[in-house]
Amino acid sequence: MFVRTASERDLETIKALLAETWHATYDAIYGAQRVDEITTEWHSLASLKARLTKPNSEFLVADDGKKIAGMAYAAATSDAKVVMLHQLHVRPANQRAGIGRMLLDEVEQCFPEARTLRLEVEQANAGAVAFYKANGFERVGDTDNCGTGQSGIPALIFEKVLG
Image (tube, rainbow, N blue to C red; front, side, top):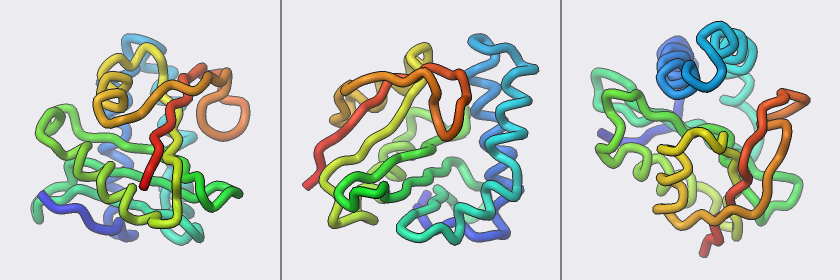
């Protein structure tokens, strides 16, 4: 498995990966219909494609040459020393194999000027909360609207000091 920059030809596969991981993680929390609504809105091909060209961002995939097993997307905030990890997802069948750690390491290396890596995670996503804590993140707050806009999805805010 290796980590590389995502390309337009990867977007259909990434969209399917996001739907698979979201259903596996969030159906029990929000229900399959709500997860379908969220993934349709947040993970459309148009929204994924826009991430490919966003300045000061990195859109990565974990690939073994045959399949994409994970993805990550991070972007600098208005403060160049703070990077927001917007997404890090690994297919359920590939979890606990070091792929998430590989993606996280690459995100950290892609922003050498950054001093803080920030993310939001659903409190009920115990696996993700444990993963981030095990990788040096600490809870610094919470939000009622995970992601952009007014999602109505509560989340914990975690940060990791870099460098």
